[in-house]
Length: 524
Image 1 (cartoon, rainbow, N blue to C red):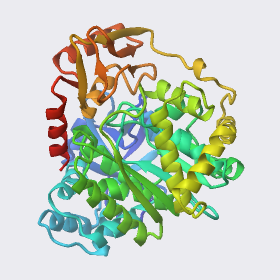
Image 2: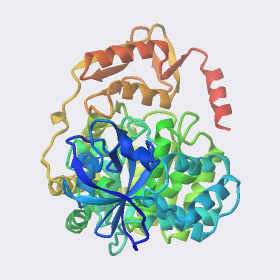
Image 3: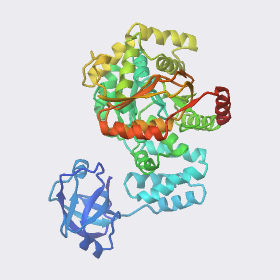
Image 4: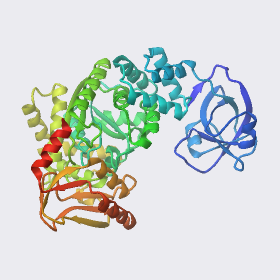
């Protein structure tokens, strides 16, 4: 991360930049000659500072015996894109100078001691400047699993994190909705955003791409339009059509949270406190003043119990009050997929069908999208109750005003606005899962469904998906098709067939009353 120095650094040696035509999607890694590095006790994965024209770039070291010589620094295309240097430029190599308060504060956190606002600022600044090693950062993140977060500390951390990079501000009501866990088929964003924008509510919606799920909003939106825009383009889009649907990668929204996510993603785990802070920091940085949070709750969801859901909802409201963001938090059903189509192409297709009011559209997806849109209208003061809000939302759908707004957004984001749902291409290899006996679908393991869709090659391949012929509590007769798996790769499909034979994401039962009792017991 670039920062300006005050000539504090101690020069180790100077070296010339040597560029390699490779990408590792991390501009913070450079290569040093092993022999030269050992003379200064520099090891693999250590951090060093590169100084040029009084600017500091903190990077991670990878040692090599052959790629670079002494007094050379090997860099990737990512590094050249991120930092203002040219090949063969000379830079000064120096040891990294941390803020001593940041290490002190992380030690205190691990001992369950309260840290000050000044210490929080030191941690965030060092994370932003890449001065904290990933292992130390992992310890810092882990404290949120074991110790209850202090209300003020969490709120202050959220606000301080937001201010680490770009801040956006828009006039009037600026609304946002966020679902905290991927529920298969739950692509309500692509329906809710054009509804709100068609009612002249500013909705600068940003999102990430999938990390631990097979599809996030980013993949679904990318089926219909470009999603990579910078700050000025986002402002232009929002001014023009009242909304945007944009990947946050290029927007520098609270980048400290992205570094924290990086260390927790490999375990598919994220502490509630960090999740809440990350979401609200991006909200605040984006200038949001009205926000709806959707918390799907079920034993196999991220939030597994009613008690946890209420605790998370309470924290969202507390931080919203601290940041002057008007909040509504809804705890919704996470027991099964929303709709029958699972993955990017199909979910985008379903969103179009609802906006175009097809007769063969997903009723439960439309029902949830309408519910969330109504809640936001009430939150924004545009409706006094659910009845009047629902009348307004359904009018926007039935009169095609929401679809017309979606077409405006698609066109503004450089795509074809007259797209039809049938135009979206699907995977060419498929396999049906059929019932071996009469039964009832009595449970859905949402995490295992997530895993199976990823094995089909999601999120890398948009044409990998599952179609659910039967859903939770449906009766199934022997030899009926329960669901169909699709993939562009025959090998991937065969692999998932083997996984499915070992464990299905559906549970089948003939004693349904006993199963219902077990589910109620889990939830309480």
